[in-house]
Amino acid sequence: MEIQAAIAKIDQYSSNEEGNKVEIIERPNGGISIVLAEGKLNGNRSKGVSMKAVHAVLNLIAEGVPDSASARVVLHRIRDEHRDAADVNISIISCDLRSNTIVITKNNAVPVLTFEDGESRFLPLDADPESHKYDPVVYQFEFRLGQTFILLTEGVKNAGSYSENKIDLRTALGSLYDDDNDEPGVQDIANNLLNQAIAHDSGRPRDDMTVVVLKVSPAITKDIRRECVSFPINQSF
Image (tube, rainbow, N blue to C red; front, side, top):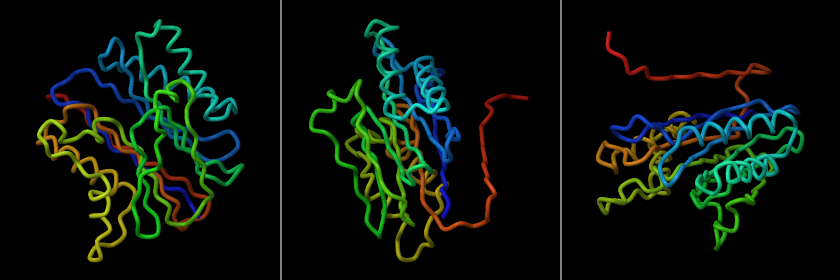
């Protein structure tokens, strides 16, 4: 088996300040972690808060601190540093080779979408998400071939809300697995869900949008690790 992961993201339309930050790190005991953060300062999107949260979590994970403890420390640190003026949604998905599990850690009510055995579903959310604002909830799953997990940000979750054309994420995901289609790759899933969210906002995202996809797949090549990055440069020559 191998873990495949992909990320697709876009900033809010006509904005110079992004509020989402996502990074990948190799875990000290094997595996990878992907950390996603949405920061706000005084109610406004904040790249600084997002970057601070992601980098602090990554540093703690690199030192061997468990994901949930890493997130908890960083959430309290940001709250204390900014005197409650800053908020941050943190979502972490890890492939932990020590326990042979997928671990998802999050402190927010943005749903996690999954696909397995031909069925899409949302992970259950706590009835009181505020109770996890500084004490993240943790989900853990043993490795199973075909498992697909999708982390989203609020911009994707709320796409189309302002035009009464809100995206149905389960339907959007299910459309990729129609009988006439080959099983999509992780980058195809990330790109397609992001594009559908953008379309529901009439091509002008009203908030930053990020989609993170992680899948347990059959191994393609032994012992080779691969990464691919595409980063747009908005510059006139």
